[in-house]
Image 1 (cartoon, rainbow, N blue to C red):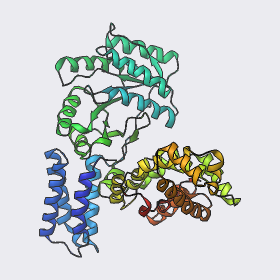
Image 2: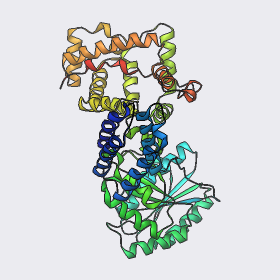
Image 3: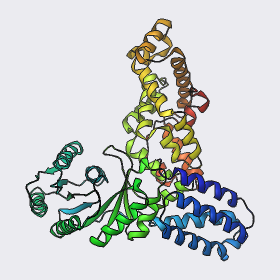
Image 4: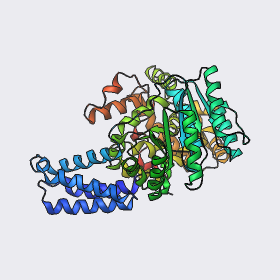
Length: 478
């Protein structure tokens, strides 16, 4: 996740200096706080938020809490982490859908913030993870394209779509959609509303009427994290006009600063409930302040990684591979292709490393070396082979190799490198009986002090090779 990249780098450097110190003086605490303050301001965090944040840390750091501890530097780091969590809301706050169905969710926000896409992502999230029957409707009568877009996305995510058109009044659309949702026994109705390029009185009056008609259990304010300081002003205006229940922060993957995430909660007093982390309809993550604070401070986010693996790793393929290895059958190139595809589903090598403790810099290296692009190249090479060649790479002679490299637009060196990596991974999979990711996660959870409790019993039939499977030294130099 690109978000917080710069902030994370700056904070890790400042805190590294202080965390190793055996004793802390007021002077070195002040120096560190000055650096932290600068890092936050550069990350576009709102000034009042920075002031409060620094003041809280200062009071706690100069009090007994740090001086009496055995490791003052570490204790200072813990205070920073706790205060970061507090700024962002401490706990993940899920949607409150306990209402007579249909529970209505109203999406509000400026034009271009990503409301329509977020409505579709939320539909998919609720149907897949919470097994809800979802209907979507657009009350945006100013943009026919928005209604069409929602119709297309609804079909893609398998949600009911209630048709509306530009001749209708937004309030009438909402009333008709609620009536239809009742007859179809829909659990959740998501209402997409009109946005403007900036806040105006007419827009606010209309959305208040729509809110009154919809009587939603959740009013989610959708905001583009890329607009930085402006995010705070829009959040304020919407919060004064509507009883917001939460925030959806979009385009997080494109924002390296992350100031909005640290400011919105403080300004509105409302929790961030979801992050939009990409364009695909599954790119919506519940917002966990503890995990995000941990990532900002370069401590990784193992819990999110475990959840990703649980959700996205194909258990059947993993078990099939494990059985194959137990029977003594080799790890062939088709198995390698499955592993590469699963790695991509988990956000590629950089995405995985970003969530591992102390691996933030490695994630950046992986990005610079374009590791995910190289995975694509490896898949292309394997795709150019016949089934026979994939199952038995030993038959690859000169002419076969030439045919494969011509077909995949690669070189003989690329192919030989792939074969070498495949051999190394085969040896490793043999040792691990094909359950690469499962064993890796279990080991990691243990190393992190009790993090494995939720993993061991989960029977995560992982099947992905551990990090060593693709030694960094083997990536081609570009």
